[in-house]
Length: 227
View (cartoon, rainbow, N blue to C red):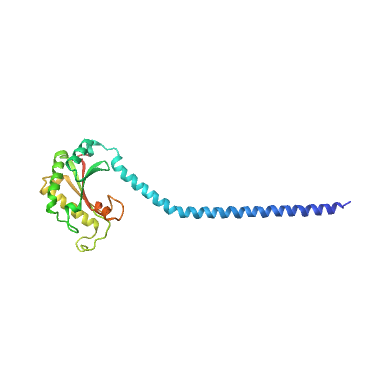
């Protein structure tokens, strides 16, 4: 017979071998899990910039769509029938809703030479038609003249204009002066805003996008005296 002490010794050895094997497998599992976690974290970190870019694109698309989809108070911003009449009267201009309000967009190629704030003589016929619409359909409204530029920094006329915002403000003011002096609109109804490059009509650096962004928008506001 095998002595009991020897049997106990053999049992302990077997247990230690089995336990050691389990511990090794457990450590292998931990290493595999840690490696998988590191891999996932690396993939997540790489996806964040792309996700952030997609988020910005989504926000921009939502902002753009809200210009036409946002419910509007017709008494304050102009009815759909008024919008249709303006579009019919000014088919060659960019007439649309902007944040619920009726906006008449005129590209700078119509009104200004490059780097200038003097209105072209050929722009008078366009501005006269705009003035007729404003006097006829919106005689009781505040009118906002908004100046816009592209994002290119000022170079040739840097000594004249401090920034794109300054240039856009001067051009908006030139249109406002024309509407008052030549278009017979009351000066008290007109406000001038200079956005510079900070409210682009089109996104991108192409020549066509920049041309759309260089513009003056004439926006029909709230009735005079409205709170």
